[in-house]
Length: 307
Ligand SMILES: NC(=O)c1ccc[n+]([C@@H]2O[C@H](COP(=O)([O-])OP(=O)(O)OC[C@H]3O[C@@H](n4cnc5c(N)ncnc54)[C@H](O)[C@@H]3O)[C@@H](O)[C@H]2O)c1
Image (cartoon, protein in one colour):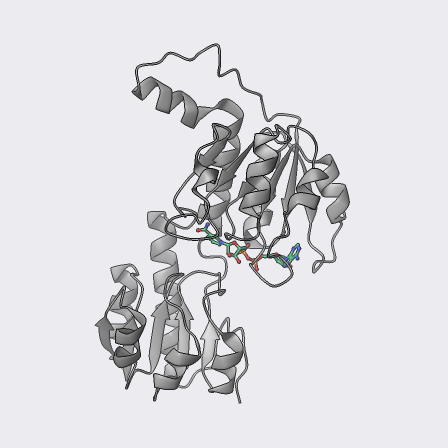
């Protein structure tokens, strides 16, 4: 059976497929037309966030049984179309959660202490000590939107640095606050929800206006959950203290480059899962899960149930 690796994954995962006797083709970054050729005869497709699994790709897939996402976000996969086609879609929840949570905390500190601005100014030969007085996170309220794998790790980290942590997640039973309570109380809001119809534009002109004056917004989840135009307007108006963005409406380059320029914005190029540890974890997990399924096992961490 054939495995196509369409987005780069760590070698340890590729080795597992080989050891399990699969024929492995690594063809990353293919344009859609070439990918539609490459998918022919393939039983297992491995992706991360770049490859789009859409109707057109599935039409070209003649043997495909499983799509494995090395990571969690599945907004690049048409899950309904996969289900119709009898293709199982699985991801590797939890394997990169620590990496993403640590990045969010890093952004919280970077914003609070102007780390990126101080660094940039120094590199330009400017000693901006007076201009860059920061704030401490101790005692401040951290509002976490989405208390799943990443959100709950960030909650622990936040408590570890003595923040008051509140969470909003309508799909969990434990004690949470409402969305309106969270946005009204939080000094820092960190977003950790999947991108869905419901969460797209969750932070827009109206909801940002309800945030505390001078609050910070951190998005290490997916571009588009925050309306970049509305965020730019709020930053320019001095409504928010700052924002940190790891993800953008358009990647690799944001659709509205305006978001990169305000001094109050700290940016990273979608680095949430980009740690050595997380990349090994997701590659090994996806290879084990897909191999087991293709060899007749029950699907693990499947997000659909095709008949
Ligand atoms: N920046 C990165 O590189 C990076 C890395 C990993 C994950 N992510 C993103 O982070 C997201 C969260 O990852 P996770 O592993 O914690 O997922 P998860 O599924 O464990 O947690 C997501 C949580 O969001 C909640 N949720 C769903 N809709 C909601 C809504 N409308 N309001 C509030 N809560 C809602 C769910 O109930 C769930 O508890 C992923 O979907 C992915 O898009 C980004």
